Image (cartoon, rainbow, N blue to C red):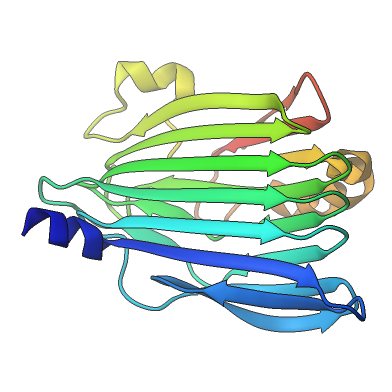
Length: 247
């Protein structure tokens, strides 16, 4: 019975965008708890929205999203709503994303906040494989706790390879609690929101012009939060940057 429960709680979404014989981008998918809905398509460029088909992320859930962008195709993904990781009541949950971008392909993914509720215990992984000439821009936001909460525990692992060579390998744990744990002081200070922008491969050449507008928006503080933003930029040993903002 336990193996059956494990199998049922593992739900995989597979998204692939590739061009047809006429050069038009086409969306193909197999959907689990997350589904992709095409918003628009223009030649080799396609935009899709990601929507949840049922409540998630609950204790015991194992959600996996696989995204493949074909050669010469551009895909823009947008989350429709935030993801809330609920208290697991003694059961952990996992959320894994695997991205493959083929030569000349492009992926821009703007996510909504990943909110870690009190009592949640989450394993989250992001694996990215970029071919030579491919580009990726990904914006990710982690929020510890819902309103009035300090937040649970989120362990994040990120692995990025470009043209078969490791570009970024990172493991970090974000943990809430009644007071900021000493171990978190170096990671996030007393900030509860961590925004990360990955600018990789061919996308790095456009960072100066494309990212400036987005940065300007994020510089504006929320009217209910007067704390300053803290931003750092890490230049990778290859075509890539990691921009992290604490608030």
